[in-house]
Image 1 (tube, rainbow, N blue to C red):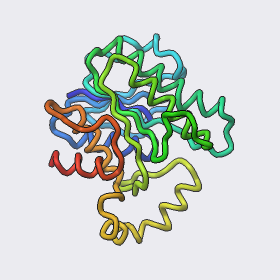
Image 2: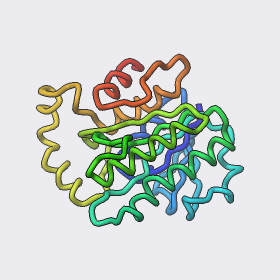
Image 3: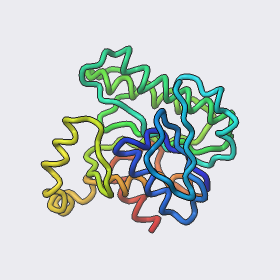
Image 4: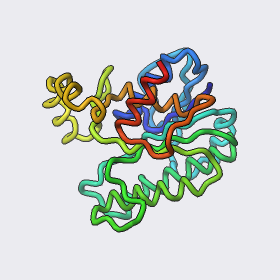
Length: 224
């Protein structure tokens, strides 16, 4: 299996990247980055690219891929709807369309969020934008999965790029074992998310198109 990861420098992307590198069924992991990751691995190939609205210049490097784990995103805090839409919707659709052309039949996994609203009625701007992104991905001719993640504990060195989230994770790190016991179906980790993403691309997968934390945990465990 050959996979591509967007947002590999972020917390969720880190989980997808490391899970893919550790999986014996994965022969190559491609990352699309503006700045190269500070790591070297026999399976890893990095594509350095600046314009995430146009992948024409690197189209030939996107062929022969089996799955895309799209983990690139930003916080909506302090951003206008136009700015947030550019990153959360426009970048995603540009990548998906480029991959459909270069690698027909590819499985596309989009990291959405718990509370995403595909009806467009939510008062939360981020929920409406992510909902629109989900709808537009579903309209494309490809197999797509929406990971509407809730609480995700970073492991294996994963770090959130949002300062507020980093502080929250630091505070809750010691509580994670307890949270896992109290809410085993609703608390997940970056590694579990990465393994669940890989599961969606395996033959015979029967995962639902929209997955929440309990679905992610179940899918990851079923693939062990």
